[in-house]
Length: 220
Image (cartoon, rainbow, N blue to C red; front, side, top):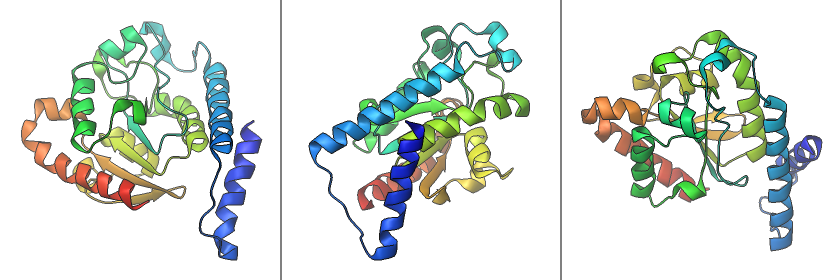
């Protein structure tokens, strides 16, 4: 299934070389492609299993794999599950999640339209930042998620998410406000909602990022 998706993406990326800029899929073909992606995501989750690849498993209640449509145009990548996410097994369901929902609504998006996941799938103790070795063990599963969904845009929340995907140590304050290209996909970093709850004055910068995100999605 993963190989088939890779073949499809390779074929689509080759079309501009012969001056074919657009292709139109029938509703049946769109449904079939979504089914392929959903099946691939299930296989990735099965491969992750009851993961014990790093010490984070020792204190978790649930693995937080991610949720949303397999054909989402936008994927949001956070840093790690928090307490509520760990208890419910769903991403961004606590106070930061409520703020994220409002952020999406501000640019006329609903949670149901986007795929939401994190860099690591288990909650670090006391909500500390995930450590490099923990990220290293979890990152392959995130990459498979992103490769399968292949969204038009990725929005990273917080420094860890942006730095991990962009492979940089630059601070989020310097990374935000710009568009990057990650494996052919546009990537827009911004502050994490949890950070905004502690530093509400930074919301003005996030609003700028959200407008950039909205404009980017509309242009694609």
